[in-house]
Length: 376
Ligand SMILES: *Cc1c(COP(=O)(O)O)cnc(C)c1O
Image (cartoon, rainbow, N blue to C red; front, side):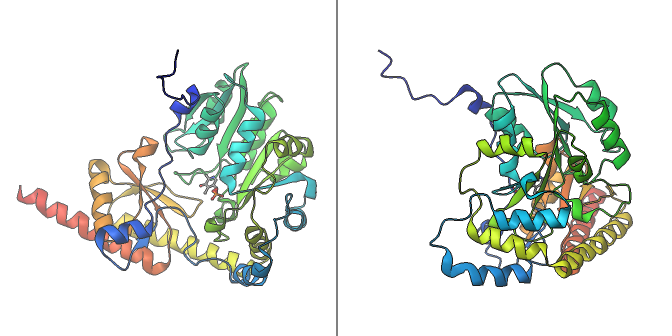
């Protein structure tokens, strides 16, 4: 009898590492007893949510005893007219994260291979582990750019999924449109591309492609977008995939019926229409990037120019300690150790004041350690 043995989770579950989120504000508040915390760790919108979304949520509250629309029809129609696709080409999900899991569930057999960039967003690997698929990491080049030749060289008979994050999290670098085209044309048609464009709104480079034109052209590509970033709705959990209708149909099969809650659907429709909020958020980010670059140059720190609302900053061997000292001063950034970048932190762009507070504390920490080194 095996009665004494413990109940066993699936083998592949052992490979799943817990996601490391940015430290929550409340947690640091409890630890330090500080009232003012600045969080620049999760690429949220420092301006807050779209005011139109807030109004829409208030108006929808009396109806929350009803189940939400399983297919988010109104939101799909709004997206279709905004993005010039058919409503049937969208699947709404509980954050963009859920789309990654659903694509994995719908497409990955055990032992299938999934190609991911390294370093990049960790959730593609989560989906792969969930399905016992094999992860094939392809490093970015030395400038942290996406190397399409290396990606193509990694394709094998077993490749099922290729995940591209552009702009890439945590580097902020992007894949220029002509290179995306070249990659898509060279890939076997049995490979599905998951093109993560979570940060597409922040790109100011004119040769960027958000991937949607390749959805329109019928390539096997799923474009991911989210309402968590520029639309400022991270707490509500809503994102979507855009793809050919036959691909959407397959992904829909593994979706839970009520995956996107009613308030999230309503808020997303309103936010999508709030051009002023999007524009202000973009301006704040573009100015914030310049503000950070300028100050980092003065501090003689190396960083990667970003097309997103965060910047990867190199702090050297003391990066972890500097990250911790920033925490003790009430400023949360993301330590990049989990991406195998132990000398880096990723800093989200905040308001002008938040960025300045970060830069002031960083300057103080760096000067303090200068004086320690020169004394010793
Ligand atoms: C934030 C993010 C997402 C989606 O986040 P959700 O909050 O789940 O919508 C997807 N991809 C990347 C690279 C992200 O940074």
